[in-house]
Length: 156
Image (tube, rainbow, N blue to C red):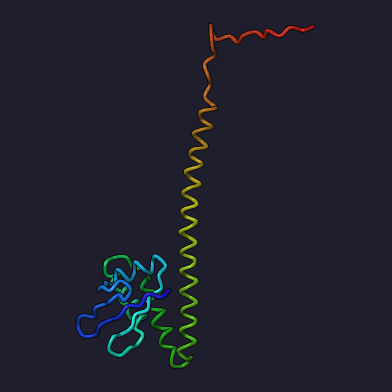
């Protein structure tokens, strides 16, 4: 289900969550999205969908706080591709860019999974090495001067 947020215009640009009936911040929106929530932001006065603008602002604020998602080089490419919108058609550029970003984010997600798997493998390997080291340490012979006990088997 899509969570509807109303943006109030003017200088404040306040965001109002219609589900919880309270004002929210850009950080709240980012947290919801990271948790898997779909968000739609609508301008209160005009009724326009301003989701993309608001999310771009959220990315900017994250970048400003030091947690940049995109490199400068990538953003240059986004701006350059956006300039092609007039010659290729806005829809085509948007589709290409959405596809590119989705693929890139999918790769980031799978890389994070691989990193977690690698950490688990390293932990298990360390446990296995410790267990092997225990079995390889020579055990002191029991009873006496260190000579093995003779077998008590009798033959018939």
